[in-house]
Length: 267
Image 1 (cartoon, helix red, strand yellow):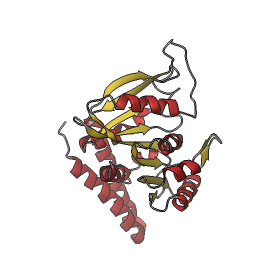
Image 2: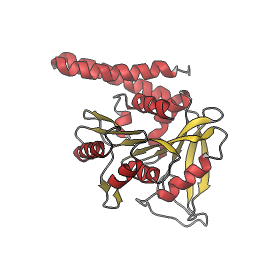
Image 3: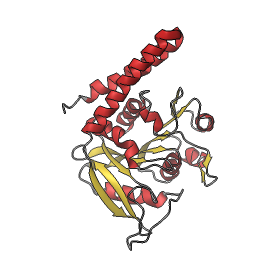
Image 4: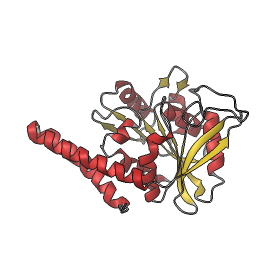
């Protein structure tokens, strides 16, 4: 398959986002037709990134003996890097297209299955485990692994998290000054009443932070508003009817390009 230039695909996604905004003002049949055409372009671009993503499966243990499965997408020696954390009841495959987009733009990516999901379901001794909403040990193990890789500049690492993955991301980053930037997809103030995040955002404030949500996902929109009050300098984006977490990446609204621009600027 012919490799598409990252700038071309990014422009396709950005054009789609622009078309959505313009078409809302026009309304009627023209809007529906333009939305369909733009959506098709967005999905085509996403498929191209998924096809061109070149990753290698990796495994490493956590401090409490769970084997974490991941995919590393190297982008050359000593590249800026990002760790991606999926949402509840999902796995690392939800970030494949984004990983290909970032890799093509020169950012190394590690996607992982957090404990209890995908390939991360057993201890080193072979005992099966259940999902856990608190994944700090998974993040710590993933970052230790990343810092040993020739394709990673250990001083330029960011986090991308979706839903409960976003909570775990900001909670970790609040206490880890080496994390340069964090992007949160559909964040929550306190998912499952186990992952409070406002204090973490307050502690993290001052470093680059991006929080996005979709308009119908009211709790996440409220969370983004609450975060903005805590950290006024953060970047925010509310998309229209685009779903929850990594579903927004699949909605063709240009979120991949938004994350890429944020990471390129801040890593």
